[in-house]
Image (cartoon, rainbow over all chains, first blue to last red; front, side, top):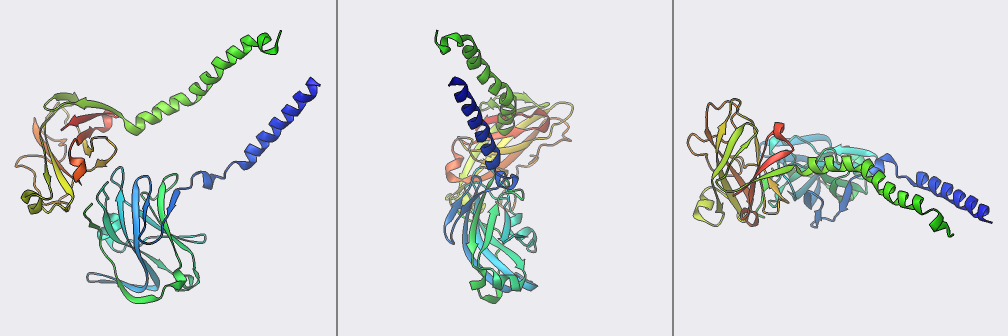
Length: 184
Length: 174
């Protein structure tokens, strides 16, 4: 009787160990960022970054001071306000469409919000923009615009909003804003 | 004799060895991580001089300007922010050390880098350095300023770090 119970317990432990191995999350999932999903106008709070996406537009060209940014594709232009919570850092923007990943354009140079060092408690507003194929824009009903405090977003917070790009009508020209510190 | 009684010495050994094994396996990594994460602060009181990283350091003056004062308006402070100004006297030894300055709030939860000329319209005192001088020949004055939210100015503390002295750093009460 006792021997039978020992075998049963042993077998159960082997099965449990197998289940633990089988259920182990894949590498990508173990290192994924902690994503905070928010709609336009809502404040998303992560570990070291707070982001409010304020407006999303599609544009044939973007305009900043004397410069006009043209493209053979189309611009997805996102206005936002961002702030650090713990320590000064910059932000990085990503546009995720299916398996494709686009980085925010750096064509605004040092005036862009991705070049700014944000500070805890003092918000900074600005514009991020992504240059994407026109055809992709018209076919994409669910694109994720995501902001993290680092180009390496693994195991850190990121704030995102989901955009139906196909529902947006491309405007001829959209003005973009430089990084501007705001009152707390 | 019950099973528990017969195996008591094994059970006692297990109760001691199991936690010890966890501590040995994870302890070293955990303490190294905790130290790297927060460092080891050396508290420095007001007007106290401390020998650190090859120099003597003293905070000789610290003050703040609020945005709703005439001084705050004239230097272009954003409403709701304050400017914290810190002045140190540095007496370097043979090799003047480099350093990094940061301001933390009273709880230490938030940190700020020194402000730049694009943040605020201020200038350092005459003959004062705004960065740690690695070419100084003798004592010098170091001045730094920080733009912080109004609520962080009171009780703020200055962190002074030096790469060679890490994980230790100076934490000045202002």
